Image (cartoon, rainbow, N blue to C red; front, side, top):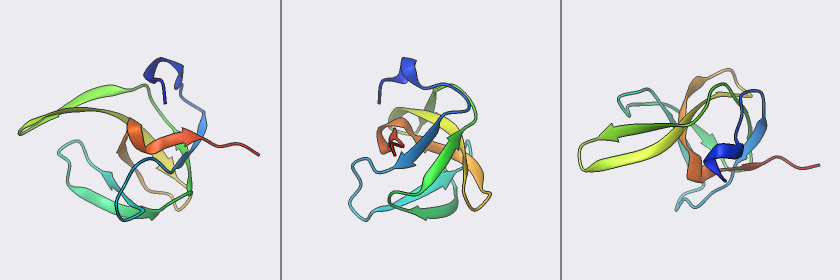
Length: 83
């Protein structure tokens, strides 16, 4: 997903590269809040930001899951939700 094309209010799904097909929804300190299965829809709440952690940084965006969990995910895990 192109970081510049992602805007608040977009519906996306979690389906990017991931070994277990379970995606961690995290807080800003990268502590997991919940895990969401592959292909679940999420609502983008903000614009992408670079989140720093020990050893590097990644582009993340704040989302709201269908089950009501609000947190951040890696942009690389998101793909447009198509009919």
